[in-house]
Image (cartoon, rainbow, N blue to C red; front, side):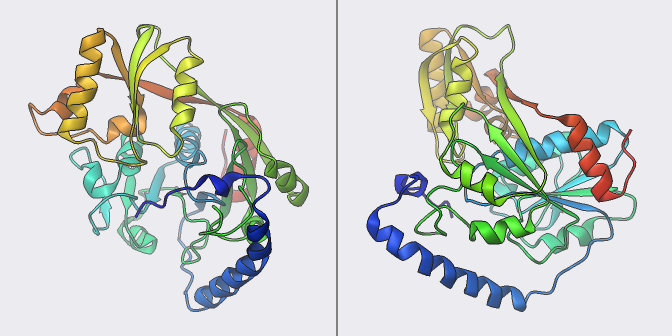
Length: 339
């Protein structure tokens, strides 16, 4: 179930009534989590395991960074497997994702990861490790799962969008936090501050005061192929569509029509037809995100969805960070050699 994100979640200074409620609520939730986790048995994987997570619900740049880490490792001969729950997918199967699978069954992120390499989806993460056979992977990367205690991780990398931070500082439903920021930081091995729209939330300063461990800054830049036209029709179903549209504008392109979908929303025939008609009317290119494009894979032959898949051009994310520092961090903490 998609949880909506009310605006008050992201204000730096919440209303007076919330300032009274938040401390007690956060303490109550912390106690509930402690009791719940007491009854969960932790599984220790046989291969080094990285978790890329975040403190809040919604997008903070996890999936692009998982893909970035995988690329770094695979370039150096390290076999990787990405494990995730397949958010938005209907299927309850534990499965290695292949080219014939659809996002409606296993989620758009799993389809996207499968393009890069071995990807396993399961609603119960431990079952993914049961499927993982000997020598299939040297390293497992979890896309999300910081708050899940059922898997022992060697590294917890936490993504923080500097335009959102941790919002108003409250745990759901009074704020966006999945758990208190103090509890989240105790699990953290590396903080990655993500910049995509050049805005800085007030809570970032507080995080930097609390965190004394290693951190990286990562610029997420939207890249368009030079052949893509100047005027565009775009569509996206991501947590913060503003990042996508701003990235398009930063490429000196004009958006004539912007179709904003809900996060992970499947594109039906009616919506696909509307996007195609808008582009045809203006004689412009259609641009979307890699995640949204993955959602259209394996659409029925002759459908509007298949046509949209064929005609859509991709806006890709380029990550700029201190790659050498990241490689050193991974090598030291995973106890593997990375040339």
